[in-house]
Image (cartoon, rainbow, N blue to C red):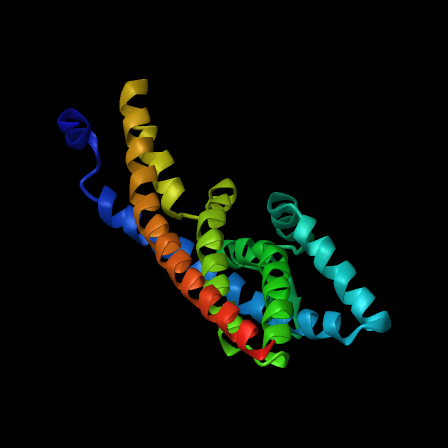
Length: 215
């Protein structure tokens, strides 16, 4: 480990942390847009009829949309010199990746939103509050998925590790660096998942008690 640490760039850790911040930025943008579209789709799905069928079809389509396909479609569909009303309209790399994650985000929020609204209409506040840990779980999944940004040259956490690995001499050192990256990404994300799981179990028990009391 010591020889590896000696070979790492002096600014590796700051660059990696800055890259992780980009991962979180992408996830936040995708989640914010997904919340807006997802809740509208949830309301449309619960409306029933033609609107409900359209909303359900849209959710199913977005759930199946491959992130890489959407990302490269956006990257090539909008020219870098595109303008709207005379103002630059080209998407940045960060925004391109964030928008490519919106289909997953919106579909996940829509599914969770349908359950939350149903619980709310049924008088189960605890059941409706399960929406919050579900949204938080979606955020962490989006953080992990945001590493797709490395494919289009966005400097996020994974791309920092890959560039550093290119400077190492042996395969063993690269594997150790990759393992180190997994740990640095994994610890905060897994801690978040554990916390979310605990909150979900507590709210789930409260929802069951509420349902039994109202039955």
